[in-house]
Each structure stands twice: as C-alpha cells, then as structure tokens.
Length: 600
Image 1 (cartoon, one colour):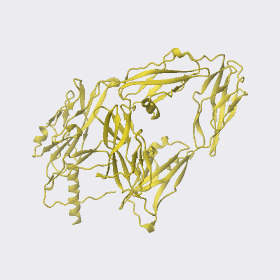
Image 2 (cartoon, rainbow, N blue to C red):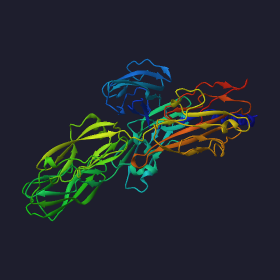
Image 3 (cartoon, one colour):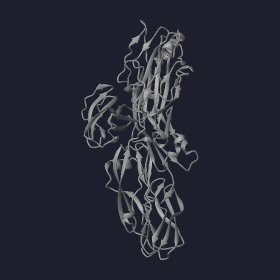
Image 4 (tube, rainbow, N blue to C red):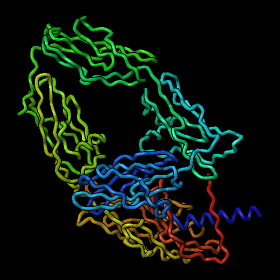
C-alpha cells in the first residue's frame, strides 16, 4: 500500500511540475518601473523579529530625483493591513522605518510606495517586503557566539560556529538560513549547512582584516520561521598590512612644509604609526601616530634633487609590520601653481548604462596636483559618487563612470576641484547622457487570453493528439519596439524539463525572430512543458544592446486521468518574496485529493 501511495504521489508531483512553472525574474532587488523610464530600486526582502526596529535604506533610482515619498498601501500575506505607525516613510529620502513591532503578526508585509518625479506621481506596488518572523525558540544558541579568526593561520577560512539546541526543550530545526538584511551584504561570504556556519571558501578573498561580520539566522521549525538576531560574530583579527599612501611619490619645493595624504591600511583596529627610518637620514620628518599622516617641517629640505625614502612601522595588539619605502619625497626648486585656464576635461560621447573614463585635458599647468569632486555637485551626481558608481583618481584626475550607474538620459553638471600647496581651482563640465539608440524590447505574448501580453511570461498551450500537430503548427513572431532597426535573433537555451527531446528541433529565423516548431516535439507523457530562451541583439561594438526572454510551451494532456490546469501556467515572481498562482481552472477528476507538505 505504501509503495502504491508513493507512486501515486510521485506522478501527481510530476503533473504539478508540468502544469505550473515558476519563472523567477529578480534576485537581489525589488525593481519597479513605469513606461517613461523612471525606475525605483529598494533592496530585497528584510527579515526582522518581534520587538525589533529597523530602518530600510533609501531607494536608488534612475531618472529625475524622486520626492514626496508616501506609503500608499500595506498588505500582510496579501490581505489588507492597517498601519498603526508600524511603517513610517521619510518623505524626503524614501527611507522606511519599521517600529512598534511587539504586537505585529508574523508574515510577509508588502509595502507599496508612491513618490513624485519630475512633477509626475508614481505608485509602485509591493516595492518593499518585510518578513516578520517568530522569536527564536528557547534552548537554541550558537557556540561560540564570537569566532576569532586569525588571518595568519593556515586555512583560517575553516573557522566555524554551530547552532545547538537544548535537548530538554525538544526543539527540532528543519532548515537553517541567514536572515535577509540589506545592511549585511556580506552574508554571501558565509555558508550555513546543518547548523554549521563558516566562510564560503570561494569568497574568502573578500574578507577584510580587522572587520567584524555579524550574522542573523532564520531558523525553520514546525511552528514556522524564527529570527535569531545577531546570532554569531566572526571577528577577523590581523596585524597591520597593505599600507598605502596615495600619492606615494611626491615632489616638494625646497625649504617648504609638506603634509602627505592620509594613508589606507588593513588590519585590526588600534593602529599606531611610527617612522622606522629615513634614507638618507634627515630631520624635520614626523608622523601622526594615530592617522599615519607624514609631515615635513619648513626649512627641512634644503638640497635640490635629494630623494628621501621613508620606512614606516605600524603596530596593533596583534603584531607589527614594517613597510619599506612607504613614502618617497623628492626636493625640487619650484612647484608651479595651478593655472585655472588650463584645467578642463575631455568628455566623450556618453550613453546610458555604459562605463566611461573621462580624462583631464592635456596642457594642465600645475605641479603635484590632487583632484577631488567639488562639494557643489548636484544630488544626482552625489548619489553616483556615494554609491561607488562614479569615482575619481586623486593623482591623475581621471573620472570613472561604472556600467552600473543609474544616470538617466539628460544633462548633468560635474564639478571637480584641483589643488596643490600653492593654489586651488575648480572646473565644471556638462555630462550629456544619451539614450542608447539600439535599445528595444520584445515579447511573444501568449494564447491564453492574458492581457496585456507584455506583462506576462511568453507562454503557449497546445493540445496533444498523439502527433504534436498543434505544436508543429505554432509559428511565433515577436512584437518589438525595433522601429526599423535590424536585430540578430538566436536561441541560447533549450531548457529540458523531464525529457531530452523537449523542443529540441525548434529553430528561429535570425532576421525576424520567428520561432518555427515544425520539427519540435514534447515528451508524450507525464512531463509536457518546454522552455526556450531567445536572445536578440541590435548593433555591434560598445553600443550593442541585447535582450533575452524565455518562451514556454505546455501540452495539455491527462496523466493518470488527472489534469490540473493553471492559467497562467508560468508566473513571474521574486524568489525571495514568493507569490501565488491563480486558482486552477480545471480539475479533470471526481476523486482527486491534493496534500502539500514542506520538504526541508
């Protein structure tokens, strides 16, 4: 009997896979957009527990600066929730504070956010997700609660901690995860398996000496999901290393005073700096023991052409390290002040979503120049700088714009300050971001009556008559926004769901994108869903623009005389927040019983 039941369940499970496909479209961020191109990014789901308060970071955006943020709707597990100051949004920044959580029920809270941009109001449904978890069960702990990691040790990344349970409390944990927390992106540097927490060896190079990594856990029991806040701390300890001054080599005018830039260094806190030696020996050189800034007193450098190499010693409670020739000073006769008329930038033609380097124009008059962004840049530019999407090399003045920048097409003013010991000047230039002329969208739609078609995954249903005649008759041509542009079309993935012959002989017209199924087939029993991934590319070189999209085909056939039919049979969702399917439209049986269980 048990064997028969197991066989029946396995068949039903296969039918369910064939009937409903979940298509995950977002992994790290909740992204919402409107047809004008304004995009708002909140980071992914956040796990919190009872009695906790939390502030979610302000969203990133693409387009005009948003303002007048407001919460437009909140749901708890897809049911309306009455907000009693549990969620408060900063109208200027979009930061959301979660508070007064003592009486909040466990579950997934979806917060819809509205804001204005360029005079237009946008309402983003379910822009933020907060998962309220149960408190950690009694008798659960992590040992050790703080793990000391010595980077000098061999295989230091094997250091670990373990979740343990008090046998008398009879707590059974069936799933271990790290809690979602946007402020702790370093979660990916660690792994947890069977309650053992350790470093991910593939990410060990990202671990920074001297840092503390605090991890919260999400533990699943039969009662539900529990939050164990700040369950374990990995304290990475190290003696000082990787001391860097930038610039490292400088020229100083004869008999003038000088100060270095502040150095960077890695290692545990409590650094103490000292000058180990100077070659050749000299007086008038000092170092700030707390910051590492090197100073040279006036009238200490009297010999033009002399070169001084400074060896620096740095120590903390875990050891000391010497850094030979950490800083080099060359004495010169004269340092030229900066001529403001010679300070400008060579701005290339720039397009959205691309990376660029913007150099200082040749012919700059001025010596030993240090470059920084000026304080009067716009909020849009400041945001790119703060998020690491735009940076400047303090020695060369080169400005780097990362591909991940969120500057929408438009004009931006960028201001840069150049300074040396004798002068300080500022220049500005206009950065014009152009729309990529090759940008486009496409979709294949569906034959299920789902509208608007572009809002649903591309999905088609065919009846199985033993010959696949309806499948072979499919001839899908995409709807595009190419507007006369030529695209190259290709099939990049043929995903097999259950059988190696799924859609195997499908072809695509590389000029039109039309998909031909005349030689394709689906497996004739049990599993009857196939997936293709179509890639279309317009242009070549740096401005080439590619779009990929999946296309699903399902054959409607009964397995074991049972058919569970969902419309749509492919649903799009964020895997971190989950979602719900539509109610099945057809159940072809008068005695079908379904039971769902959670599999750890």
